[in-house]
Image (tube, rainbow, N blue to C red; front, side, top):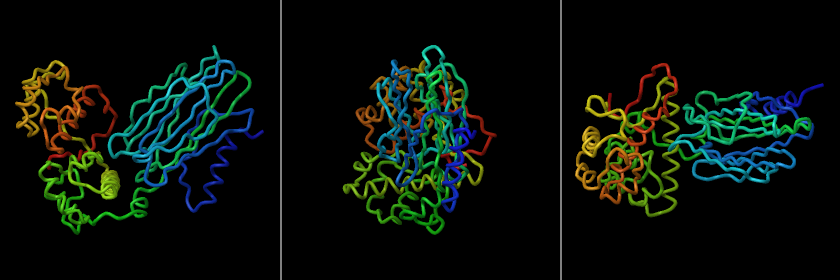
Length: 386
């Protein structure tokens, strides 16, 4: 007898043959069977790539059913729920990729507790080639895990979910399939970016200074906004952190212009990710200055206000040292500091607020080991022109 999993794989292959090229990566490889008709649902981003996922879990104690439902974030907008049968919600968790990153892979682990016939799952996303943490769904009794990644130069734009039920033991089993598409084809399908080479701009946009960013704005027909970007110290290292609210502060008065610019930033980021991948290098965020050379403890929560000011001076933001002293911003509150706090303190320039917030976040990630993924010591594209 042909297994349910084999039939699922055959269905996926048939879908591939119907199309000119198959964009589905294939089932993850988790254990899967069903005594009832398999429930299958698909979610797709109309344009662009998946940038986040929301998962809700329900448990019906009388029938011992473990129910999951899913929705995707496509850039800045959420899809509807997948439509899988669902009730008795227990928890609802969300994970979003960091700014301007998108999903390129997914890992799922399956757990089983025979006492109570409880089947649980937890999920981990890969964002622009970097594996994140597990979302943290209720989970126990790990049995297996499996993962899938988009090919190099592609991002995920869809997710297919299969659910089966086995009467013996009241087992709820799930399988998944990612849909991937070419980054370059996605860029070609929407309004194109100006040719950076013709503009005399470096391909590594993270290195752009304010004037070079102004040149790009001119090519987009937004040159009248370049002086505002310059005044606010927005450059290639901070432009990808801009939100629609920031754009209002920078002079984007028209809704359509703001939305258009956000789409262009996404395209530009996709372009540099694809370029860096082709070179075998990894994009780096704002580098934290070497703490030991500054005479600082590797535990920032122990820093005094003067210690915090040493970091500000090292990254070229010494003009704000007095404000940090006045507002008593020391190490034990540093990681709670928000951009809104910085604005309240009197830091008016959008780019400077974003730079401080991003360095604090990078420092937090280093301290907590969030970026401890193994890489074969690739060259880093830093924000200081090496």
